Image (cartoon, rainbow, N blue to C red; front, side, top):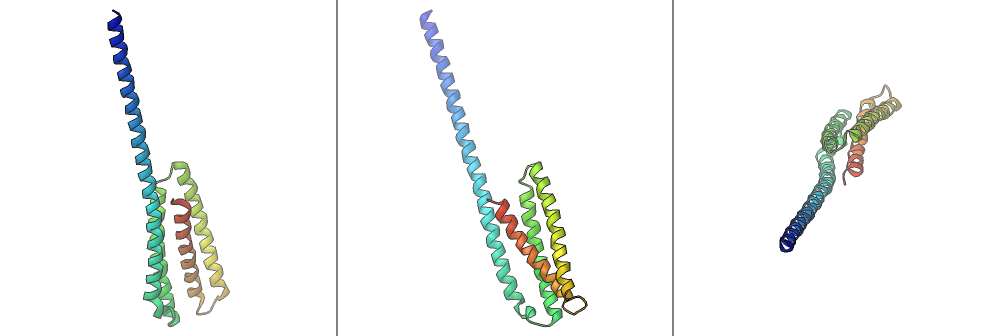
Length: 161
C-alpha cells in the first residue's frame, strides 16, 4: 500500500509540476504577446510621426509656389493642406479610439469635441482680425491648418507609446 501511495504521490507531484510549467509557459506567452502589442503601438507612433513629417515636407514643396502666389492660390494651397492634415488627423484618431477602453474613449471624444470648438474659435478670431478684407478667408483656413496639424502631433505624442 505504501508503494501505491508513493506512486500516487509521485504522479500527483508530476501533474502539479506539469501544471506549474504550463502556467509558466502561459505567462511567458502572455508577456511575449504583451511585448509585441506594445512594440506595435510604439512602431505605430513612430510610423505616424514619420508620415506626418513627410506629409509636411511634401505639402510645403508641392505648394510652395501657390503659397507665395495670389490670394486665391494661397487659399487653394492652404485648403489642400487642411484637407491633408484633416485626413491624417482622422486616421490617427480612429486608430487611437479603437484601442481605448470605453471610459477612455468617452474622455477622448469629449476632449476632441472641445478641441474642435476651440479650433473653430481660433479660426474665427484669425478671420475677424482681417474681417472684410481679401485676407479673411486665408486667415481662417491657415488657422485651421495650424490647429489641425498641431492636434495630429498632440494625439500621436499623448496617446501612442
